[in-house]
Image 1 (cartoon, rainbow, N blue to C red):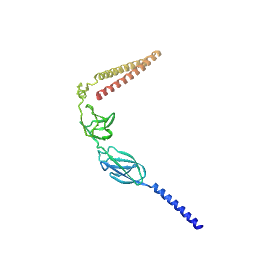
Image 2 (tube, rainbow, N blue to C red):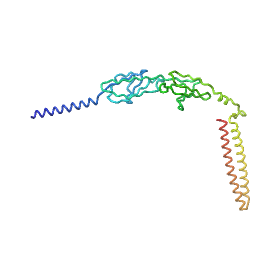
Image 3 (cartoon, rainbow, N blue to C red):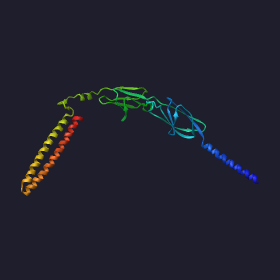
Image 4 (tube, rainbow, N blue to C red):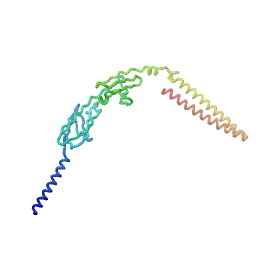
Length: 263
């Protein structure tokens, strides 16, 4: 009876160990991942961990869902985009991924240094590379100061060289003669208006200041209390007017300087 109990106990322990080992095996099941790309030599990340370059064959991974990222070769022009995948790794199976990167489009202009826009988004300045597939069918605009805008639609995987035309209105504007060799003849009415306002307001400030000084002298010399109050009020009034017109004079002078230099 004792031997039978011992055998049953050993059998129960064996079954528990077998179940535990089976569970461990199930939780540790693995499959493999193989990644190829065109061009080859692309970088591969698995769950944000860099694991190597393509071609990547039979990489052991635990069974389940994994995030795969493939980057183009880091040789300058290719490194413009990446591909992302969600892959379920099955036990004892090899999951395959093939990624193809399109060669980037070379965009240039004559003269170079034009800004490239997609709608209102600035992408850079020529010469530059842009990825083809994400931009297929989109409209672009090249813009350079002094030249007409150049617009195009990206339909083919071919380099683009835009010949920009000069903007004649811009050239004529720059070649307008100057007034007295100093002031460019642009916005001429505004400049003369600011000049006149500067002179007039400065003269008015000088006039009001003289009036204030004259009333202050009268205030200092009179013995009549009523006249003293009147002269004092006039002194303060003309001082305020002098300060206001002097401020207007400085503001108009600043505007004139801005128009001459930047406009």
